[in-house]
Length: 166
Image (cartoon, rainbow, N blue to C red; front, side, top):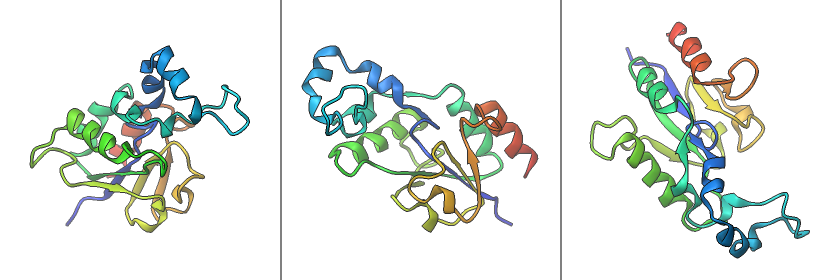
């Protein structure tokens, strides 16, 4: 018998996106002015298009430990998107996974990363995602766990729920 399949989104689930923004120095933020919205207002930045930003991000609190705990009972995969206009996003995200979870055969996400803008095309038992209405997450065939919601505000709540469902 196989373990249930569990997918993890990356941005704001495994990875603290704001930490990458915070690491862009003031000069770089001015240099990357083209990533602000079309009206030129700086309150609505498109930082996910900044080359290299995904390599700067820290893990979400508790994410690394949660993945290792859940991998004991689930077949775990990353199911993430990469911004279409960011030429380094795929490489930076892959590097981030290797840096934080290992690159060698036998590491928890070794050859278990799927990049897609259509998460609903992937079949599994659970998807942990912070944006249920983006990239097909809301139409995922298994159970969607809305990370950051009142029911699942943090990794402790997610792990407790999933460990009781195996």
